[in-house]
Length: 280
Ligand code: DGL
Image (tube, rainbow, N blue to C red; front, side, top):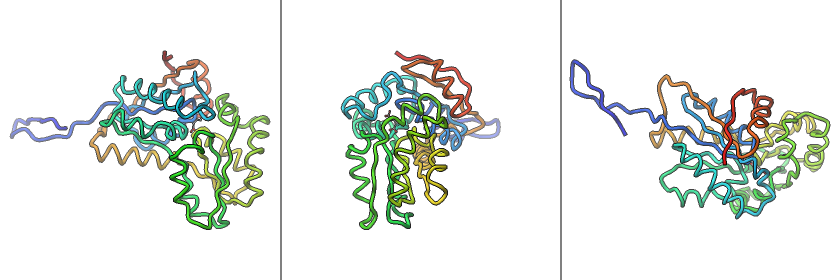
């Protein structure tokens, strides 16, 4: 798409017009903010809409069919508000709905998440990789396909992090209760000799400092957030969707849950003070 600008001296020149539509991101709650902050950092000119489906959080233990329905509704909400691209900032929603969203809205680019076990498997020296994710993610076809690409000789120890999402949703990521819960999952991984732990749910990077303290410096934590932000950047460049220029990105936040509660937790987790609009 282009528009023409004329000058007093000559004919109109083709000029690529910035695409001022926002990028939409969705998650069951605050987890997708770990992706949001990477996208905001990588693409400071882009307006961002963030939708937290907190009325239905957590997604992880629900049947994938149900998560698919919630995710389609969340995507429709973002598209109604003009989103030019949607980031599924949620591994569980990606497992449940990435393929069906692409079928439902073939013109819209969707960027999904999958647990980064491939890069972790490439780096491990102990040939043991741990992955923490929700049940929905670990049971989905997307994870099955990713796992198939892990080379023989690398064992993958997978654990369902029950209760971790709920803990992060409270905003308490360094309390004694958070530590007791996190120890239950990461100590067995450390004791099994893994040297890479894949954080397979977007809520978990908020627990990374705590996890790192428990497992020590010899275990690397792998978060797919930065790679997803790079993928968003690639897609908007390839499809000429950039809002290039001097525009400074504007941010809007929505929740199907409690707006004031989300505003408080957002401030605590990512230091962003913003008002949150209620949905539905
Ligand atoms: N942040 C989501 C994920 O990446 C949420 C999981 C949940 O709501 O259980 O999987």
